Length: 156
Image (cartoon, rainbow, N blue to C red; front, side, top):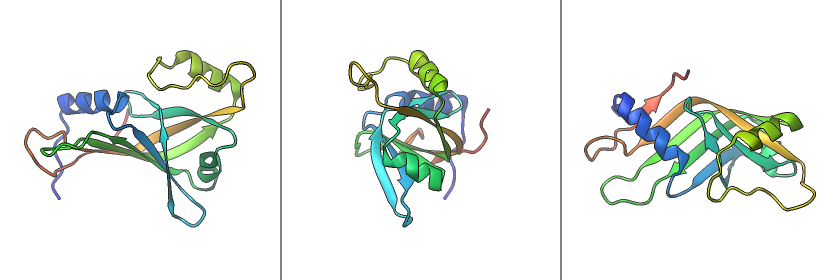
């Protein structure tokens, strides 16, 4: 399958899309038996396609990442008969347990619709999940109707 050339305009369009994908963002980790485990998340994606978000210490994704750090995020577009946009960001994830790093992330992240500040009063223990990308695969960003993806493998 041919690969669509990555132009600065297309990369900018992909960056904008992953900030607020209309179909939501889904995190895929691997269970002990190797099967995928999928759940919806509300991450922040930086310009170098690093993905970060909060999770509760008790959530399964923490155990999954400890066992196997290979993670994929799927940013979904809305179904379009002409060309649906989807972006996959794959890489190695890490769970950051340092309370200062978690608080720094909370203070610096943009306010977003759907972002959950957590319950009032005592906060449950939260961790930060950070994925450094090894691959970005973007579909639906070509000028004409095509199944040709755009693939990025180098990140600054």
